[in-house]
Image (tube, rainbow, N blue to C red; front, side, top):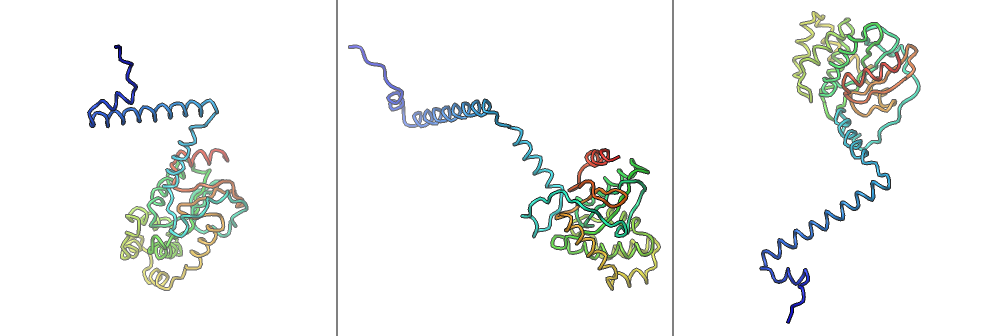
Amino acid sequence: MIEEPKGVMNMVDALPSRLAFWAGVVVTAGIIFAVGFILMIVLMFKGFDFSTVTTTSKTTTAAANTNVAAADTAADVAAKPTGKIEPDSIRNVRGDGDITVVEYSDTECPFCKRFHATLQQTLENYDGQVRWAYKHLPLTSLHPKAQREALATECAADQGKFWEYLDLMMERTPSNNGLEDAELFTMADELSLDRTTFDDCLENETAADRVAADSAEAQTLGGRGTPYSVVIDNEGNILDVIEGALPYESVATVLDSYL
């Protein structure tokens, strides 16, 4: 008598239990792979854009270049702001040009420290074309020291040494609330500031209204994290937004479109 061919299941049943288990795993994996391959082919024929996966990844990376206060992490990304910044509200500015990058920053933000160097390079390479204005956005829920440091820079500004003081601070702070308070006074001494005037200004929080006004303005414009920058023309009209610590090449691309 001729035996009928055994079915696949009969063949599996005939195997020892351990081999039967692994045979089942291999068969299941093969079915999953085949289904996935067929699904991918179908999606390709239907015009599915696989680049959206890459775009999502890039968006996540870009978000990592911004320090966002804990209370604002769930906030929607603000639309590009319109309107203007009153030129009279710009106190601390360096460079010359028809275009100004107004940066809202937190001195203890590590991304701001990185972006500070980027804007220094920008000012050097766009000499006579671009100005850099600095405003305050201390994220005190993340960096309790940032408010006092912002006040210190304004006290230095009252003696004509804002940028020298800020450059020293950004150079020395380890970021994330790491700058020792004593360093605020050490830097004042190194820049030959009048210590009596500086100390009184800092301890009495003389510049608190200026810092508060800057922060309120940033939030009105959609700034939820730092650094947050807007590009304006000579009349203060907002042309564009630079969110986060973008690399120099990206900043240059934005500026080139308006120069």
